[in-house]
Amino acid sequence: MIVLNTKTFDELKEEATSDLQAVGFNTSPGAIAKLFMNIVNQNIANLYDTLTVNHIRAFVTTADGAALDAIGVLVQCFRLKDETDDNFRYRIVNQCLTLATSNETAIRLTALTVEGVNDVILKPYSMGAGSFTVIVLSDEDTTSTGILQSVRNKLLDVHGYGIRYNVVSPTLTYIKIKQRLVINSSLSDIEKQEIKYDAQLALSDYLSHLTIGEDIVTDKITQILMNVSENVIEESNMDFYINGEKALYVNQSCRWFERFIPSKESDNIVII
Image 1: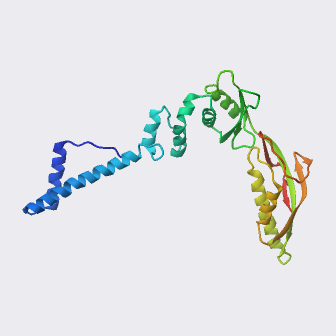
Image 2: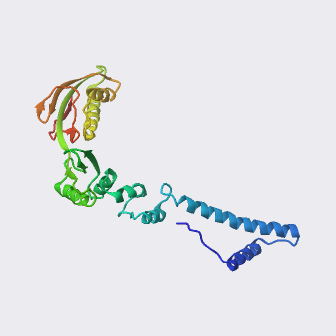
Image 3: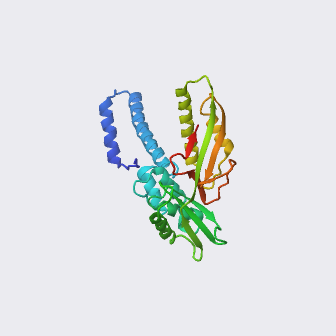
């Protein structure tokens, strides 16, 4: 971190003398004046450079490293172990809301400090007035009870007195689907198999990355499959199951606490 270093008059005089001896000068008054002016201006330029850097590092949006740590101390916000500048900067900006407690930002940031928590989704009034639910997302489809309990314990410090809250893992709704592709007949069997394989990967990626409360849209599936290759002429649904039961192949709504994911069966996504 660059800081503004102070220098005494004797130190500045010694540096100027050293600079003069290094460059040499003639005895004409004009040359001497110009040389002194250059030395003074060079020191002033260095000072401006240092001031500019320190000015930039005084703002949360542009500070980094130790400078950002120092800003955090001012608002009683301290960097977590291995926390990036961007994440720490976000917490500093929202520290006033965090200190106030009993608000969405305070609850969200507190839950995110628990190890194993990737993200949280808050649903207000889930159990009536003055209540809320925290849906905890982790690396696993179903968040472990240990992580959920840790979040509950953390929230004891920030939720308001008398407010009811619940901490849960998302409710998983399993999808099994079979789609049929009509592919350009001029292609070889190997080329057709490659297209079907790519289609399976694309559809799997779509279903695996649906977020909590996100609906399944059949037009989106059609778009994904048709975009796999220009040789895909048509696509249609053959089978569609939700939680093991056959369902109509139509847009499927997802409730705020649910999440659609592919089933655990080996043939959960089939392209024929």
